[in-house]
Length: 72
Image (cartoon, rainbow, N blue to C red):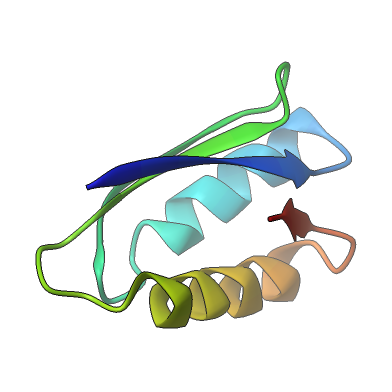
């Protein structure tokens, strides 16, 4: 299942670093960030708890960019 989230990220380089890091989170099958549209598309692995995965994605992203936000 895929979902698109509105995000806040300050620069294109930060968006790329967050994308690479967040792709490695357990439960994420694929993830892409568009800095221009400030959106993140996440494809979850089957049978995962999406809320728990997104909490891990946010935690990983904040290590890269402390101002990173996911708007639910």
